[in-house]
Image (cartoon, rainbow, N blue to C red; front, side):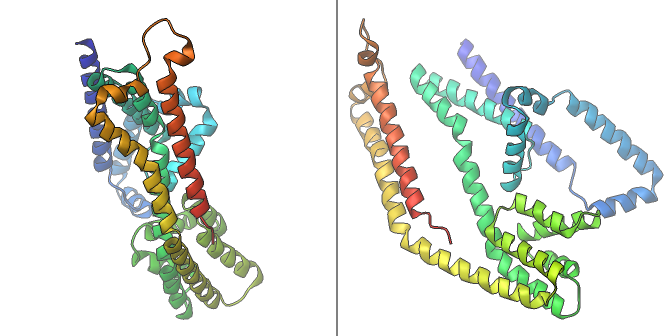
Length: 334
């Protein structure tokens, strides 16, 4: 009964935290900084209310300072690295809030598995998997966002090139192109314009974008723009050539992806086959299969008592190692 109460409490806390985050995102809609400053400058009373509201929000949020709490446990360097990863994945959360959700998720996975399976070791294994489950999810999300950005980059450069040839400046071309482009490239270049309007140099704004979108193609664009500013030349022709080169890179990457699909599919099948076979055998004869994760009872040496869990852990480790090696073999950089 006590365990069920703990699980219910954790579940309710997780749902309340999600509801609070959704309410915060809807209660404070995003607004252009210049437009907001203009509106506040016209109405001094609105500016005073905004200041009071900001102070109230700060006092409320200061009562739950996740960053200072986790910085004592993980260190400030880890939080800075996590903040960079969240920015690259376009996850609108602070590092402290993300870590708090991870802790709640791990405890929920552990207690739910313990309640359903009634096996401490299985629950511990599920909790361990939940602890590191965010790593592949964030990696896939970051990769999808970067690939989507790169696919949009060539067309975006063509729009900038047409604006440059019509007599406009680079930033004016970026402004026009960003309004007609979908996310994430439109959002990223609009953020670049906001940074330059606040006095940040264009090269620094490009470096900030490169932190948010770690792409080799964007690095090429940034290098071409910096060289043109320092040396000179026709920026429209340079951007046109860079766009053509990015198209060629995308074509070559597509051909490599087609040629390596068979190897990736083979590695996926070989990696998932033992887990599928274990699931089928567990459905047929659970008592026979459960010996792999259930320690033997009796006064036995450590190796004899935990031979099943050790063999299972070694098998999972070798499977993950094989999948990692196959993925590295199939991962060819252009």
